[in-house]
Image (cartoon, rainbow, N blue to C red; front, side, top):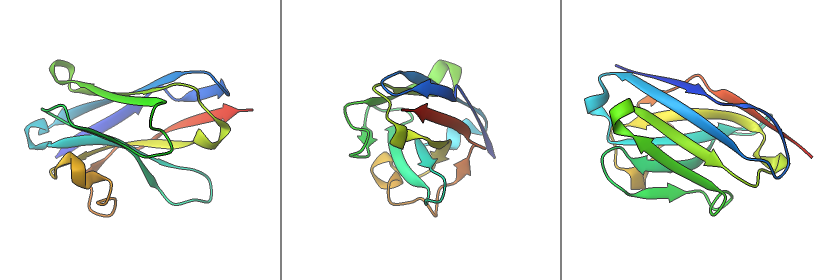
Length: 126
């Protein structure tokens, strides 16, 4: 099993920046891809970004491309999501995800993701 713990959420104003972190523990050798999803109130969970756990491939949702950056530090078993130029529509619970599939597939695998964190709330006020 793999355990994921997110941190870094909070209340910010539109235009501000925030960095989310996700620490992985357990059988991390299983991980091929890590990423972030989010779920806004009353909406379905959606893909945000993904990165290969041992490579350099990154993928982003169109809605965050150019504003958000995903990265990881394998030595710390930690993944990050740097969020800049935040907008009220970015308000959501952000979930860390880890998967045994390739990064290119994560966006389409929301129902098949192997491991999830419990989420951290990001609220962006206008």
